[in-house]
Length: 205
Image: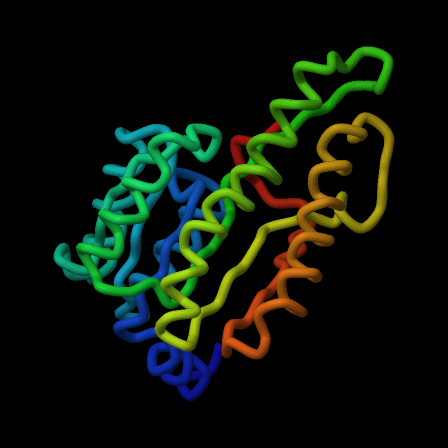
């Protein structure tokens, strides 16, 4: 990356409030480090508080200021606690500029070997959790007249492969949600992006 490109990234994200779910490892951890490095105010969410503390420390070690980092433990399937978590994020930073729905759960098994419980759990984490959090954050973005919502899909959300009937179903679905939401919210000045990574070394199955 050139010095000019790096400077452009810093200017684009400096002081932006960026909320990342699934921030305790993998893609979410990488995003947190990158945005913190750019001077953004980063909200770190995930289920494992110890791992969030580790990522928080890594961001600080990389030059981030502690006051610009907020740990908000969150299970995206716990809809009852979600409104309070959103209120805490808004109370801390006053706004949310970018919501990164990155929390995810993998599953690898043939269809006949995959229980309906697994199908439901994968859908809850990869699809419904993102929808629920987006619905709670969206009103504040509409009020401020700006915002950017992202969802993390996968190449498996574009092409189905063996052993991935549960995962692909959820990742295809989140693409459809994002496409429809983009059309609904464009006139409010809100952007919606779908991230489609390939193979990434994470803790996911």
